[in-house]
Image (cartoon, rainbow, N blue to C red; front, top):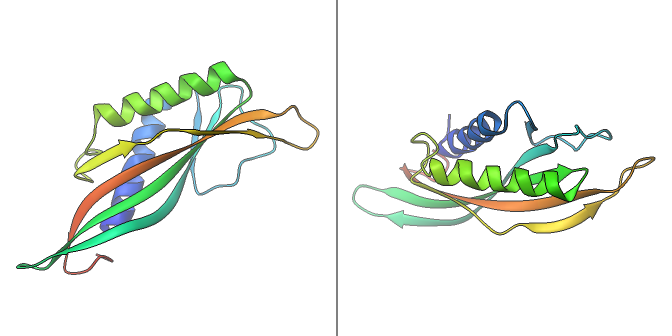
Length: 139
């Protein structure tokens, strides 16, 4: 498994554990038409922002930005989930040793509409993951 996949899987595991059993945590799924009352969290793989070569021996310092989409039917639930996500990541910055550092960013808020249902509140939270890989950024 690549270092990127290991990091993203560790982020998913951390959040699924921290938010259980209240919120449902998915990875790369579409938001369903029916939201759980306790909210929904979807981790998106995101993209690699920067790769810096380190010579002798060859390695790459990788900065990867994942996105955590948080959706709730009300503002209070959304706020609670955001606080819990921030607390979980800051309590284990290495995601169990999968990365050198994980940093949640500021949330970008938006309203989400569902056909035949009341609007929900959503927030997109960037989570930057820093890790080092040997030989190739694909490792």
